[in-house]
Each structure stands twice: as C-alpha cells, then as structure tokens.
Picture: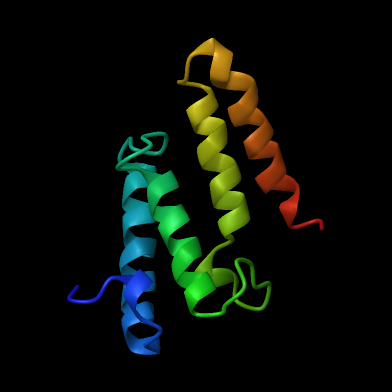
Length: 106
C-alpha cells in the first residue's frame, strides 16, 4: 500500500487497509499464529482497531456482524497468549482477555 493508515483519512485507502487486515487476522488465527505477538492475530486486530478509529467507526457494530467483533477477537487472542506465556505474565494476559471479553457489556 502506498499510504499507511496512520497517514490518511481517505475512506478508500482505509477500507483497503481494513480488508487486508481482516484477511491477515483470519489467516493468522487459523495458521498457528493466533498467539504470536508480532505476526499473529493480536497485531492484525490491533491494527484493524486503529483503522476503525481513524475511520471513525465503532470497534463493535451489532448491525454488521459479518465485520466481526474486535472485542471478542482480542479476548480470544489474549487468552491464547496466556496459554503460551511465562507463568509470571499469565495472570496479566488472562486479565486483559477478561477485560476485552466483558467490554461489549459496558
């Protein structure tokens, strides 16, 4: 992409980034990278959240379930990370997972 999502508010460019990041998220979740911090789903979902914020779109839109729920996705990925991280970090990852999992109730 010639334009990074941090450098634009053009809806066409942001839509392209959103589509690419959703593909990355799906591929990483199903190809064993679900808990990989740099290449996996957490990176894709975090970037997708930034694109949505720049596009002034909600992170969760119940009227558009086909777009997915970023809160549920982030809860799932941090839960997966908690299963692989050192014991001293496990509680923090589970707490983060629980925070995202309960976010839609706010």
